[in-house]
Structures are given as structure tokens and as C-alpha cells.
Length: 224
Image (cartoon, rainbow, N blue to C red; front, side, top):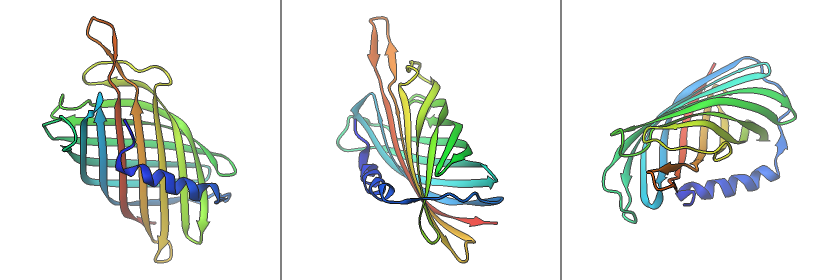
């Protein structure tokens, strides 16, 4: 399986990342919150079970001294694609919480959790996991910031059963924020990729049943 139609975002943003300068300053207390539009690509078991969809979301960010946190909510209506064998649409409601602590230079450590609920329940896998990783934040220009994050997901639980090894679930993320109206409005763009190397066993031995999602979000936030 591949990263879907959002894979190009990662390539372009990574090129910018490699030439960017680190954002070293620590922020004072800062809160922002706002709506987003979400676009997703979901694949399960094989590339034949392929869905794409869109929906709505919201993102809230809190920054205080060396600590920061993101809470992201999204609900995407996934529909089967014409190149696959899936036949039934489903809704995916996801909660993604990240807590960060600034370490040095552009680097912060991250700890959090994700929970995605599929409806109808067994049309796709509902999944929850603890996340741990790192984030690198860069200032691209006046009022323009970009962040690259990555890490592993542990203790994954699936509605349809299955297991994942300790290093078998990963996530990658890219984020872009542009300040407007004297930094009171932020234009936001985010890309997230998740892959669970899940295995199931029906009594005849372990079988691969991976889950993969790419989710892009565009919106704005009010800062105060």
C-alpha cells in the first residue's frame, strides 16, 4: 500500500524542511482554536480495500513555556474507490492528542494518544493507541512556521482483533501555520500518515492485515 494522494505533500514539504532555519525561541502562553476541512485516504488489509473521503475537523493548541499541546478532532465520510473491491461507505471519527516538551534547538519530545472510531462498527477497524515521538519546528519566514513530527504507536487495540509488534505501528506528520491579522488569525495546514502492521490469526497462523490512513486538513484558527 502507498500513501495515497497526499504523498506529494510529504515530498514537497520535506524539501522545504531540509533548507529551513530552526525556530529557537520559546513562546509565552498562547492558545488557538479553529475549524478545519479534512481529506482522507484509507486502506485496509490490501490495496483492494481502498476508500477516500472528506469531512470536517477542529484543532486546538496550547503553548506555555516549554510545554505545548494539540487536540485535533476529525470526522471523515469514507467511500469506496473505483479501483478497489470495497462496497460500503463508513464514517471515521478520530481524536488525536499530543503533549510536547521542548528539548533543544528545534526539537521537542511528544507523547499522546489516538482513537479512531469506525461507523458501521465492523465496516472498518476502530483503533486506539498511545503515541510517542519527536517534533521539529522551523521558522520559514516572518509569520510562517512548519513542523515535522514522527514516532511510534504502542499498545494498539482493534475492534476486529489482531496484534501489532512493538515497532510495527508508525505515524508521520507535517504542519504549516501562517500568521495573519497581526497574529490573531492562523491559516493552518496539516498532513498525517498512520500505518499499523497488524496481523490476525484465524487458527491457521498469523496473516498480515495492515491498516493505513493518510489525512490532510486545511483550516484557520483564532489566537488569543
